[in-house]
Length: 307
Ligand code: MG
Image 1 (cartoon, protein in one colour):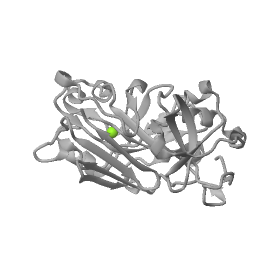
Image 2 (cartoon, helix red, strand yellow):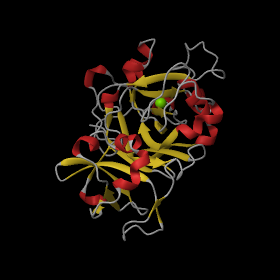
Image 3 (cartoon, rainbow, N blue to C red):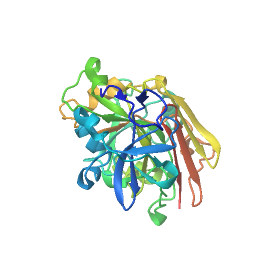
Image 4 (cartoon, rainbow, N blue to C red):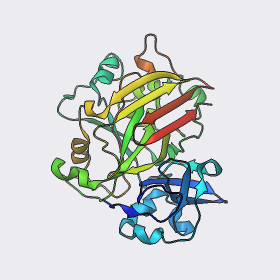
């Protein structure tokens, strides 16, 4: 979508900058920058404080002018010296999320989360949302909600970031609307999720959407064929391939845009592979001190401690 950006800085090793766009705190304010190929440096873009406040969304909105944002004399920063935030720290509206989108995951929760669902799972995806305010950064703490839930679970997911908006987008056109990809942990309070007919409450607790570490643009990563893994305290729990999605990314974009205009920066979380805590026998829910690490090939890692 954006095309390749010519090299403009000596620490970026190739002729073209890999388009990994990060939102971060540095020097007392929020910035947006391009992450180097080795993920050790970030080059801040020339955005005003106000523009940078919306994170990568500012770049999505100014995609045609990205070249101009690079023509600054700012030097590269070490990633060790900044604090990464969610690439879109406050999405403009709820995050679209897809339930039951890997066969093995649907099977592991068939006796619990999905038992009362009468919709034909092969015809239409389950879609719910998370409120924007629950988004936190790729290394931020997730706060356990105390008495509100005792069944906190993780879900490692590839998230699609919309670039060009649209309504009634066809499958054939859908991929041209993708700006890029990021990682989310669709943290879930299982007891609350199942208590209500709708899932939104159990999915939207404060801090329940770690996101990051950056957005990788669609010309750098084929999100339709990448690997999604999740670990709890170093133990590999989830290991899936997006080629195994029941409803693929074009189908999800077509579905979510039926009668609803999608806007630049909208986020669609594509569902989680098998291996969530509820699917274990017996179930194993998260407790204070646990760390969940999610890695998606071609994007990177988010790692969040539960407190
Ligand atoms: Mg999910």
